[in-house]
Image (tube, rainbow, N blue to C red):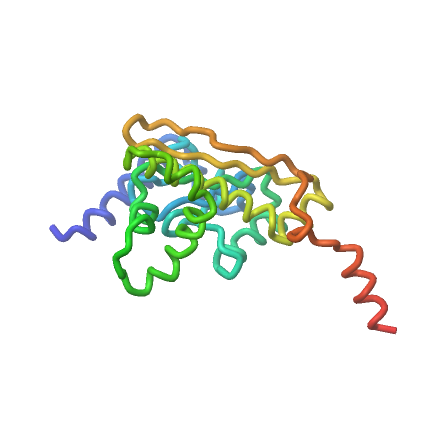
Length: 221
C-alpha cells in the first residue's frame, strides 16, 4: 500500500472513532471556531501543536514555519496574526520553539544552503545580538540550546513590535504573549518568557495610533 493511502485510511478511522463518541462532533466542529490561542511554531514534523499541548480541533489557531520566526516582512505570518487577533480575538499568542531545531542549527554554521539563507539570516541576527553571551558558552550543545531559547525570546519581542499587537492592546488589553521551548527528549515545555498586554515597547517601535488618526482626519479636510 502506498504511504499516502495509509493517511486516507487513518483519516477514515479517526472520523469513525469521533462519531462513535459523539455523533454530532463534526456538525458542531463545522459551525465555528473560537480558539483562545494562536500558536506560532516550527514546521518540524516532530512538534505538532495540538499533540504536544493535548488540545482538540478548534482550540488552537496554528501557524508554523522554519524555526518559528516572526519576521516583519512575512505577509503570511502577519495575515495569520491579524486574523487571530482582530477576528478570532485570541487571548494568548504563543511562540514555541524546540531544542534540536534544524533551522537554528543551520544558522549557527556557514554553509551556503541556497534560498533558505535569506530566512536563516534572521536567526543569525539573533546570534549576533547575543554574541557576547553565546561566545562565552564553551559547550557547543549548550550554546545551541541557548540560541534556541534566545530565538524564541526575540520572536516574542517581534510580536510586541507589530502594530497588530499594539492596537489590540489599546482596544482589548489582549492578547498576552508567551515564549516556550519544547524538549523532544522529555516531552515537556519550558516557559521562557511572558509579555503581558500593554507592556512597554521600546519607543522606536511604539505606534502612536492617535497621531495617525489625527493625520488621517486632517487630510480629509
